[in-house]
Image (cartoon, rainbow, N blue to C red; front, side, top):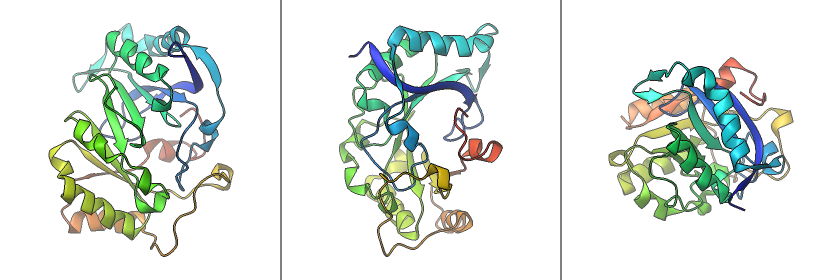
Length: 247
């Protein structure tokens, strides 16, 4: 039903990644995902969640954003807090499209984190789409929907999550093949090892024969290759415990 959503959590924190890192953000984490990436740190969102009316979700976002809205605060010409739909995979639920449209109508700067395995063309054009291109160590590289690249615009972002040398070389090849740096900002994140409590039996195993890469090695390769990407840390995992929810 487009007027309901299965929601894992809604909370106010700061944006830990992307070009918006460090800004206040209301996160709407939706339940369910059609991928099982080897490094997924939100496996709890695969199944945990409650059905909520769309109006209820919008009301909760407005309630959390109220201290900012009353003062009409802005930064970088953006009204804050931002609002991000994440998951899981938010685009699995048809109601996510209606939610994003309503939030844009209310004047929010809306972001959506998506795996890149589903069609992004139906997302409201006012939404900033942060789309993964899954690298080999994810175990889900075959699920990339290449057609999505043609739908990206300058306000969107592409994210590569890098855990191995092969991931890096693969990402570099995609950037060259599709001239991705001419489309939108490019992000590279290092795979932070999962804590025992974050492990989930359903996650894919890292394919054999791949060479792990350290955070420092990744940065040094980016610099040596003069790659047109933004390296990013998951800021929220530096501030809070990596396994903590609601941050």
